[in-house]
Length: 178
Image (cartoon, rainbow, N blue to C red; front, side):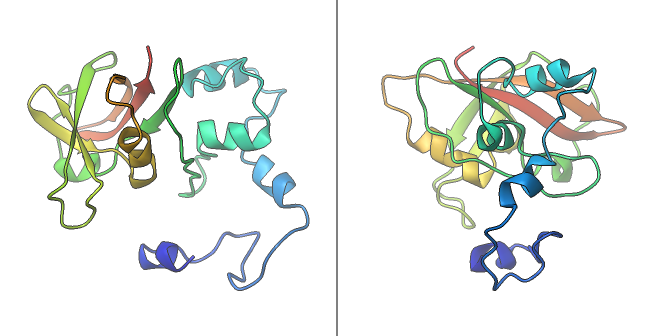
């Protein structure tokens, strides 16, 4: 909690007192962040997050979809570990700050990653590139995935979607075996 507060976390709406251990109804509250079964576009949303038809429980679904809602800025980042035939979708950090011109990155683009051990903020940081162009960082929590890769394994990064207006605001990528 102390680490989260350092980067701006105040509290989660349903759990306002950060000094209280909440145990009742926790899964039900977080499950509200999941796509409801009755939604017509549920299959498309789960496909976007690489979570369709995999038999995940509610906690797995929170991890795979990051519990994203369009109504707030919370997200739940899972600590994924590499295994064969596994992939997940995430967005890159820092992309908005780069103000990359519209059209610089497109859906389907193959990307490369490089460990950034000289990074003064995070020695485990991982930079992401399209060819030689720096386009953002892997989110801090997801860096563990790359640091646990076996030397003989390769993992691929591919652009899943791009949010752009005058500049690129957000890049979603698929990480893993594709």
